View (cartoon, rainbow, N blue to C red):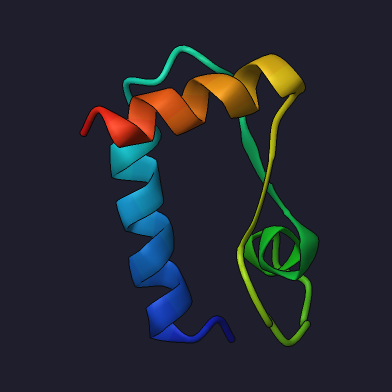
Amino acid sequence: MIELHYLSTLRKICAQLNDCQNSWVVTGSLGMALQGVDIEVHDIDIQTNPHGAHGMVHFSASK
């Protein structure tokens, strides 16, 4: 089961990045748990390409 603080934080991330023009995905243990794997979640891993990472930094800073 995914602890509520991870889901709450992920919702905030999604809200921030919803209008971002870069592709991104949730990976790692949270990504697997969201797909139904019975795994303990330790953190939130976001993966993108270098262009996406640069864009997310500037997009998040502008909010």
